[in-house]
Length: 278
Length: 313
Image (cartoon, rainbow over all chains, first blue to last red; front, side, top):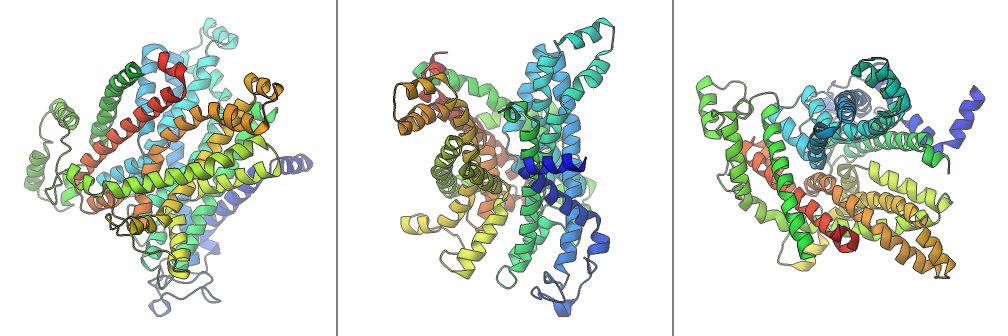
């Protein structure tokens, strides 16, 4: 077992490094209450804008708050928002794609055209406007990011249905009088899980980036709660006096997005029989 | 070719109506009341009702929809609630800046991305391919507001090679170009990463084709096989996918403009957001729709220009 795992890791360096990066990020998010040296909201005005050093490893911000602790707690928020939004997009988009492909005909054409329209809209602009209309809250962030990811999931779930629905085993199920729901969810769904999960990983990367972008523009959660995007925004405002305030959140965002992209990319190469066979 | 252009033009009208419908639906299905969002929690019911009348939200939904479509298609994108000026006028004033940035970054992306993708495909699974793929993955993972800030710190504040503030003097071409360097590099790197990836995939498909083998068998030099037979045919999917990425380019250009404090569409959007300028936002969304449909049209036309078979089909 261990040997097999090791061999897989050596054979898939991209996915492994990505998985490691993601694990570290998830661990620091979950472990934030234990790992943080200070309360992320605790203000020490005397120590404000202290550069990184022995007392504050990554320095302090404008209010004298510990940057490292805020980064760790911010990881929780970033991961939670991206996970929730990708999960909802996967559920809604996946179901739309499954049903649309299974029903076929004109319904399918119309649904897919609507999805194409949604797909062509710049996701950040869509997110900006939705959050602006609803007001900044975690739920509106999740709604906005999820909406931008529904169409791609619908597309990826639909494609395999088109070929699977005419397979012998599906026809056999129909002949046995199975309900459409049973055929769809028991017999067709398991065949596309791998592909959908790979895509979910890649969209997580996108969701992290969109969340950070919205927070950077001031549309994230309300201060003083920490999120990487809003920390970057604060840092950007103090860029002349305290460059570390923008550097560390920037690196954190980059590492998480990179880790998710590497994992998703590596998994796609590993699961795609076309590439694996070559 | 003229017939082809006309057909595509006609086909883009339903697309436009569809995108506009999407805007209409999104603005309405979003939970919460825009009047409430504009006026804040403490607004009186009568103030909210008055704003509803002003925004036309008191009328039946189909009437709102038809009027929205009619106005949008006749080029009336509304007026700002705050300044009272027309949305189109505000956009037209800063559009040159945004176009400068978009074009320069696509150029940077093509100059870096196409050769990198071709080399990666030709030397597939070798070290250079691996390095190019990793670099492109890195570029895809680097959010522009992060890379922009890093560039600003390095080149603007540390080495002081490029200016930090980007207000552009349009009449002075040297100044215009000088201030474009950092933003275009920031946005261009993302484009380069996308284009590298797409080019590599497209080239891998093309290099497997029979006509490439035939060309090699005929003794056509390797260089010509790759760039003429290979890239020539791979350019179709590249153009299509680059066209599809325009949405991402637009979103990223907004962020880039904010980081480099360049006047442009990004600044207008963020300004409208901060002032809760609802009509301005809706107008901007409509303008983006037109932009998307036009870019899709250009992509289609480029397709027809590159491949005669598409024209005749």
